[in-house]
Length: 233
Image (cartoon, rainbow, N blue to C red):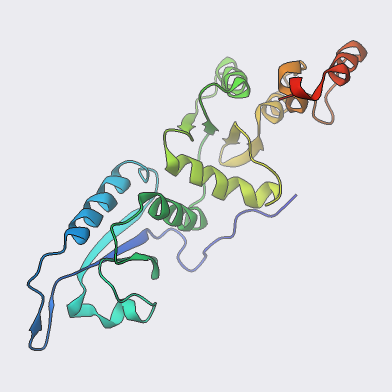
């Protein structure tokens, strides 16, 4: 099993900084008078992304006038406003910001600075294993926070950033992904084992319910291996 996610010990517990350099300001006798439509649009995108996709992240949003502070982003390769930086690294410049890129970069930094606390369930709609996992928790009287990784890209990027370092880069991530008391449990099968629940084989889901260590009857195993490849999803 791979190690836990890398920690940013130097900045642990500190908010992730999003910095926007707008086409504005002055330097000596020079002053920018022409408004920047892309800058205004980018500012709106950042604020809306913080309010929606990044609600669970600790973020500090800083705005600066580019011409007044032109040398600051230049050190990191930023020269064309609007310039967007996350923790001192340029993620976009010259055009209106792609909010997906912003969300991914902020979440990657956030995960390295803040441990997950409490019980969290990362799932998606139309997921049989998610339904089963939630029922296990509800039957056990365990309260949890549900994160829909389809409707909320921030939840998806957090799931990937927290789980990939644990299970390995080459291991596919499926739903659900469950954490209890901030500790990684795994999927519905692992949750069932953790709670002492006997997991019944689910032939519609193939290996998802026939993972190593599960007790499966000879009849069920025989039926599974007779299924055609097209029937195993």
